[in-house]
Length: 86
Image (cartoon, rainbow, N blue to C red; front, side, top):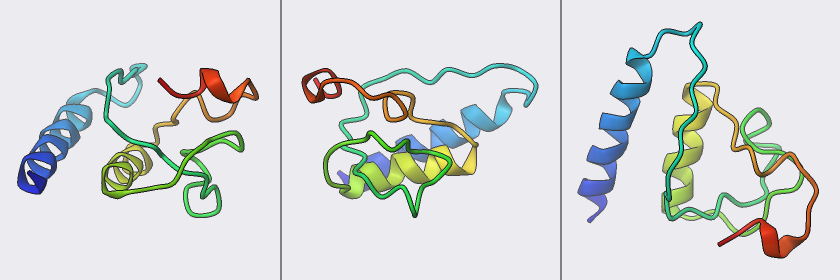
């Protein structure tokens, strides 16, 4: 199972890398990740209003976002906790 996840993120990395930098990129999907609240480790990826605890799925997503300068958009905005997760 972990090999499948790593293969997915390798493919995702290649796909993101193929998009020209000047283009706007929106990455949408259910990554089954609870990104946690470690804004010190992930300052340009997470906002101050994230929730949950980081796990293996989260780390893969956070590393991919950091590498490609992507922001997890729900985390910078203050809103009721029930609207932050599905």
